[in-house]
Image (cartoon, rainbow, N blue to C red):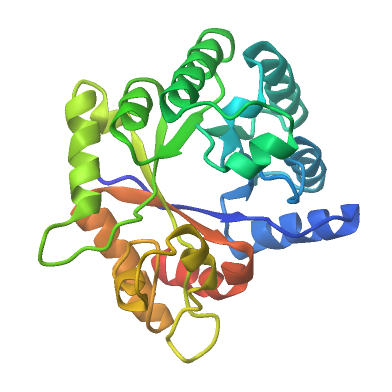
Length: 273
């Protein structure tokens, strides 16, 4: 039986208490299930922002999409996670990634590890959370084999980056999902598959603004970007049909959009529920 859809959006620009809480209550009213905050220097600080959102809402879950595990010692992060879990009455979902922006490590005065070292530290943090905070749902997002193996074995939610375009040479999203299945076949059916949307139309043109997506995938052409799973095009009904296709074809049932898309995607949520 297919899972029910869940929908989240990423809050990237809200500094005042009133702005954070206004976005949180609006999100709850628009049918979103989860409000996410990223973990980048220059963006809102995740834990204070999510605490403010928790105080203004009743059912909305709070998530990190995703914390850079390399910024944290496991026990200290665990303390903050436990506190927000309790303050939100159990509504916290912890998202983790290995980190990838060298400049942010430099600004944080943290040595920039190799890719292998970053994934090793992520595994350590994940194992700590599983031992000490097993009641906090864990989302791990990424694309590489080692990271997805950790996710398949330890997470409840797999964040699929969907960064490669589908085409005549194959279907990268399907390949990554098959990899996850093979990495942990005994628990695959328990996993929730997630994809993050980085571009979609916010007017009647049907055309997405690719500026956010282009920052993450600068090597791809516009044509290629439009063929990545994280880019949605067309009318509200077209997009709803695409999301249904993600569930029917891939088993993806958890979709996150970005703050500029929140109101436009709320119409899609209405189509899907």
